[in-house]
Image (tube, rainbow, N blue to C red; front, side, top):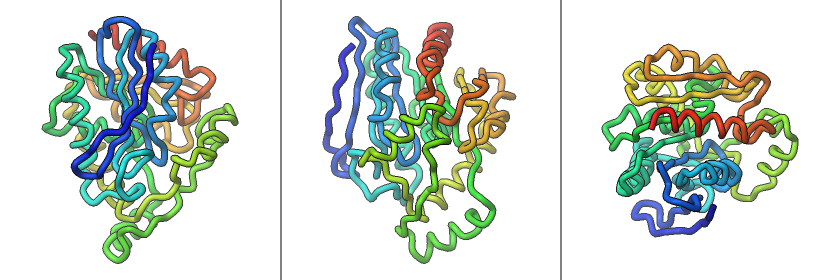
Length: 269
């Protein structure tokens, strides 16, 4: 397995940081991996390496305004810009003549589901890790669109605690010690994210791509029951890992979760 990280020019945000994990032999599929809120692609080193060791080529990237990519930190004026960014990598992957898997965690899962419901070039398979389909207190949903008009780039803390990520305390400690992890989002981002949560959840019934959804049974950040609606769709295989928290891939059982992902991919290629 070989891994590398590099930046390339991006016409919209100046630069985009990309990470790739390549298998030692010819890949049987390409995985485009989308990270979640506050984080960046570098937090998927173990997952990317395990997938590459299993014979898959993995490409991840830092979203607009995240990690090493350009743009105001965790701000977006048009949500579709995220889907356009994902599309550039899906198209790149499809150009290699192998099956393409689109995979996202949490907010990244929401983005991947929204992408799959759009008219962008479709992946062959979809994998959603604890997809964000619900969130925000009633008062936050009420106030967000008002503040977004008054002070759109005002950044507010997300109030995410390390203990909700994984049962391994080192995961949370490493996350919040990472200078590329930014735990504030603009109110404009929040308002648009709330709208997208509702839109994607309401439109999910149209999903036709073979999809794997997995969720930690002890997820206190994105409630486990919020993804139940996806399990009712014919094209979806939903699994719950009892006892695991929000970042199932970063739990001690993470390697087994990745092995299950690989087995599911192989069964559907």
